[in-house]
Image 1 (tube, helix red, strand yellow):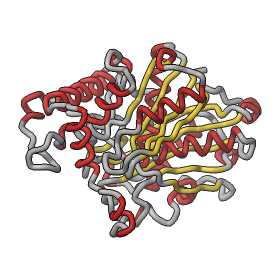
Image 2 (tube, helix red, strand yellow; image 1 turned 45 degrees about the vertical axis):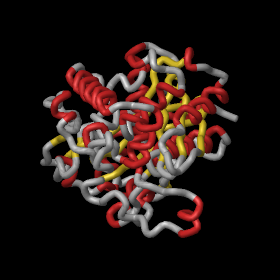
Image 3 (cartoon, helix red, strand yellow; image 1 turned 30 degrees about the horizontal axis):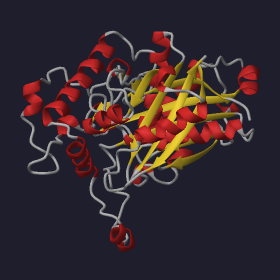
Length: 381
């Protein structure tokens, strides 16, 4: 089995709901990100064998196998294949998994793992229908916001704790923007004609004007007497991201310099009622496969689907004393969670933070709808 190397990882700036990026189709936004990825690595896109693209809501503009459409829109040769992957919130973490597995098995040599979600243009849930009676007879399936409430209640997190976490997420994201920490991963995108358009280059989701008072004023979003609000939940938003993955032989042949390698992955299946609490188990499996412990891990990215999810992760993983290492540049609450793109976005952010710290190992993990979680371990080269 060979190693799968991360050559580069890039993303668009993240646009808030009905914000700047809402002017662009998802396939066209992702095409810009893919072109930026190959341009900054001086790579002929014809060398890429496959595009594995995560997208959750695969209807309308995001339908028709958007994974194939994006490289075609980008103007890449028709020889570059593409497929679309839906593991809900973990979709472009799954495409990392798929790319790494194909390369490690010797089946492919150069793959782009990517993701896109235009939540302003293609509403979340518009690809779903009624749930099976057979499912509902066995499981009490509820909306994710209710699951986040269940976790907050069962683990004993107060509204103040959830809001304090959310405020810190915004503070960290704003500091990262102001200090230029995202500059190495964000590729500016053209909003109109590529030759005359205006470029968008900075995340517009973090809120500089938020405060404890502002968060406390928000009404519960899912239960009348609940704790989960729009302020301590991930933001609906738009974005795309892409990771260039290659075998050692291909990297050498093409003159590409690896920045990191995928070490291991871990999957967890958990109770689909609470649904969002599998991150500790997925991480434990990925660490065990890598022969590592949390003591070896310098940076930890956990998707901020809801504040209660990350607080539960830290407690159950025994990491309550390591908040400086968990989402040091913010996360889904401040940066937003463009469903299919978030795994690749987190990969780019994790890679750059490892390089900023000069650290070796990092972990990225995501809870997933209907009771799953997926985690991956990276090693900086």
